[in-house]
Length: 166
Image (tube, helix red, strand yellow):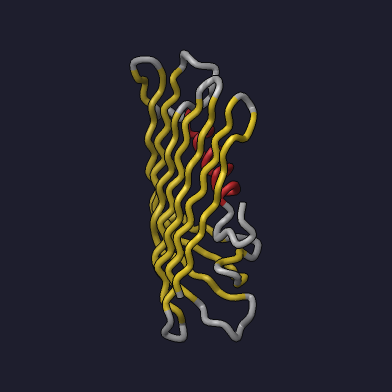
């Protein structure tokens, strides 16, 4: 992952997988032809990052209020606990700089992560978009795309690309 990674994608992935794992045993899960399919919707979830997050070279304390939807498909004929998942969230975000001489930014956040797994290959892709207004009248627009592919236990492809427009 890039040194300037905006939001810790791996941390979000682990959080998403934890939610998905808990939700797979929920009574609202439905059976599909060869497995389980479940979709869960959450509204107004507050998220506070308990550590500074670097955004475009500046460290911020980050808080969000987001809505999110998780979708899980588990083909019970494979040994994988989850064969396909997506997590989509959008809402409001505030970035308060560690350095108080810099502007605070607030605005819209959209985050998506999805993955597929089979006995030999696992893949995960995530995107993050921030469209923010600064307390000093400036704007900040950020896009991040993260991907990794693992084949037979070996990382064969990964990237983390970030674009910052100030």
